[in-house]
Image (tube, rainbow, N blue to C red; front, side, top):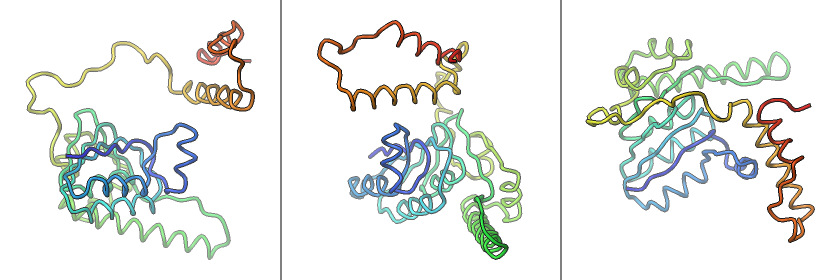
Length: 239
């Protein structure tokens, strides 16, 4: 059994170098196809934690998974939203962690141009919605109108709800004797809104090191001003 990690946004393959440079996890068709090729027909497990992303990239990945000769098991460990939801549905079997979520909604885009351009984009969105309705309906057995209603309402489903509606086959760990997951006690060490600030700081320092290499005597040296700058950003007290 080969495990393929699917963490981050679903993006086109030619965006991957930018995401990698910035240190952001991503799921792209080229990487998934390469992983499937290396699996060489062996059964594979997809570990999915993704907010979704680009439709075309998701469709390419979905197709590659459906064409794969070995058995594919999807394990949703965090979330499978939007495009990631139908990537998961390409698997022969779908399992969800008790704390995982799946989300489905209507297709969306940003449209610019004259009335003909807007009408064309509207037609494309409606066509995509019909495709998603057909896909979800076929996989779950739900009536197409019910699936469309769920999409219109941007429906979030926990593991039990996803299994009940047919979007997943099994809840992970449900037969274990011991609890598999616990909540964290207290608040997070680093708040979500601090992550990007700290990433920018680290990226800035990394770039400075590339342009102006530190002398051997300066390696690993942390001045008080650098420490204060990092703490200020962490606690939201920068100027």
